[in-house]
Length: 266
Image (tube, rainbow, N blue to C red):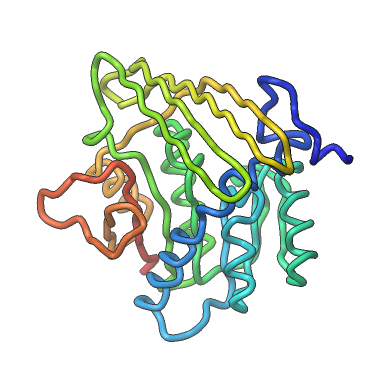
């Protein structure tokens, strides 16, 4: 049995080593909804297939693979070689070609221009204010005129509790079970930063059992804050959606734990 099939020891980070394969088994199957959302938003935006697509923080290719199979030319960038190793294996298995860049997006020297860029999970909510603006400005520079940017963030209006809060998630799927427990303790009330402890337990009949425990600062944004960042970076036509759904958040509606955003470069 090779490394990716062995059950990692407790506290093994799922972003590194052979456990990246287990991370893909955990979260790969749930990416269908998000990929369909991306396709739907692009079809609303333009009548042609995007010439170049950028997936920032692409990980194991949960979006790169399905979008490439549609004939889209996708470039993925991620700093984890282990995650990208899984992506390359999947690309070979699905007989697709995808460009991958092993580097942190902020440091990556990317010269290609894109019709569409996306950044889902583990991106916006881990960046401090000064890096959010530079991140958005870089995305703006990499987009072609009338290019589309899609990303998501955690809604402070839904989550925030000054005394801290806990949440959990459990999912059953073929051959396995995933349980995630979150504990959030506010550390910066003004900026909406919480120290978030994620504890994940994953069991799979073929891959064994994996555990992951991490504590990191997570930023919870208000919709208006995100709009201000985007406008300052040069984006227009900013639309908020309740999760990865067609439901637009209009007027004073702020009720959605996760908000997906579409914005264009004029």
